[in-house]
Length: 360
Image (cartoon, rainbow, N blue to C red; front, side):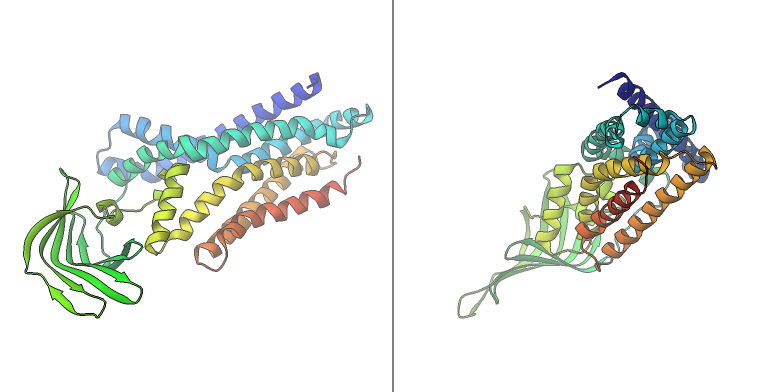
């Protein structure tokens, strides 16, 4: 690291944090304007608004816009250096363009590493508090409306509920079936099940068990009034899933995806997209940084403003393309891995094309 590297790296990080702070403050003001009526209507305490919501809202948004803000900061800084002929002076001194990229890439790698750690471990914990606040003070009370719910609890065990009341954690017309191959081996039928919050178990009421041997001869047990049971099912499975994927750390997210897949339930695409997006965000930061340097290193007669505006347009083109691919993947028409990597691959290609057009 030479003095020039430290000079660029310092200004790069300073510009990035300034841009992020500015945008996040604007987002906070807009968000408060939209939610202030809900805060008043539900009498949200001022301390909760500040500590539980906005202190956790800021890192969430800062990380979300991080790739775009890195790009904007890079364009803004590099265009300033180019406008003052500093880029020309650096290249004229014998420094190659690849060498010029060194402090930028180093800065982007630092931000990428911080972003990866935050989005996988720190921000989900903050989001738990933020989203709990939103559910309490900005959203209507959640009511589970699902009917005829089928759920796979184990490799050969399937549960069914005609309906579920999340207010008293009670399910109605419950059945539990054990299937071996194509044969039903056992079926439990109950009028209702209820979650015991003290024992952390389900209470099964008024149930019978039908058993079938290999010749499908049936044995029916007498009706049993009640019993406790541990099932691979929790009241949270019927709770609100509002932004649930944002509250899961990396290990929790992977465990939840495995649980959904084992049950054969819908909605796994959302969580797979979240998992792969977290993995690709660091790469997006580095790719967009390099593109930002390449497209703004040349001195423009139109001035810094034009280059910054062009940077904004390209950044939002990336965001639009990413959201389009993500929306298609959520509909099940595109593999989640392809959806999150495709924008990065395309913009990496754009970076290569732009690199071949600049004087070195």
